[in-house]
Image (cartoon, rainbow, N blue to C red; front, top):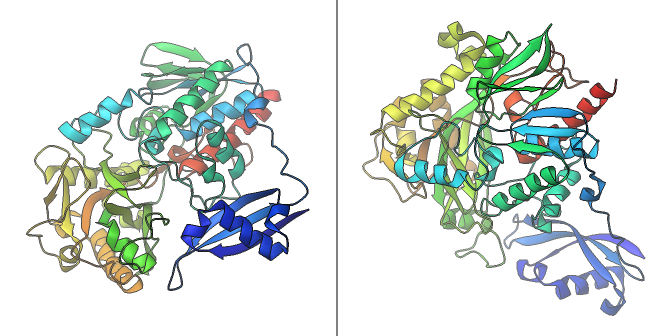
Length: 519
């Protein structure tokens, strides 16, 4: 017998396998000893009542056990002699495209401008402690992309884009906890991701693929509006009739290179704002209604959104028990992002809080054409840098002062290692951004009582929410609308918004490549 049931338990009982078995037996009208196996299919928190509960979706087996599923990696074979497909970028889009290509019998040849995932750590230390930004190796560039050292949140609403379970299972088979297959908001953690990313690389190499680091795309090899290969580091020519472009949302030089080669790109709406950091204990108290969080509950999170003057203001990339990190990709700019370790045990909670930016907001940047959104983004980041002392210290205000429009006399504690300095963000931010953020935060305070507080830091700038440029492609073939053999993919092309959606887009593009080369 196999039966699927749902029920709620206290956080402590939900961590106790025997308590789960007893409840399942009671619902199924069985003796606990008659149950051969209990499989958790889904796990989420219900904090709507006076006491938080854990909602479990369970598959109960009696008289049989769950059939073992074959490993996805068993589908991979050696492709060292197969037709080559160039992939630019070793982030989730590029690496999951590479795994899919191997499964389909094609050889991925991956080039990344940055360093391997472990060597990146030295450059992250340099930006954290000394304010030195390596433009090719930082929180955005290098093996694993922006997601590796920026939390590893796996939640996505993009269920129609591809096989989410396949993407998650591949992560598990490369070392992630199997909890990500059942948690409603799965998360790996920046301390666990480097090894997982390394394992994915080893899988690619073991099956005959190639991965090259310190390999910057500097030009395309083109003939009659068809891609024939790429130039790496200004000298090395790598030829292939197929190039997957998976460079991420911050590769501004790649957009310039496309434009230079008269490859069609478009300005795209994005979002810009700040990162808000609260004490985690305050968020726990608001969300769970407990003076001290139950040890069986994770650090709590939130998601907030409202309309201000028909423009969306919303929280983004919420990191409970997390850290605020410097995410600049070039000297002379201040960009912040959030991350969490797997235990989410920092004393702080942070979230991007941003405003939608549309083309009608950017009339003064119209002369930049397709780069109007990008230039606006860059200008705000550089403005925040110029307000400081030349390092990666970030400008900040207490939330109450931000909304009131006054400089903070002091700032609360923060997880941001380079440090904060008090600055008039109400003057430094573009007026339409500030006005909407101000009203949005006041509204969030009404929706979530306790959110609006002087104990929260408002830190600038949260500006890399998504790409400000789109590389248009055919919706059926996934190929660029004008250039044959060029397959734009992932966040950098404007078709994803996180690790899992990027991974699924990489898989979809790889399948489209297989169709293309098979013609």
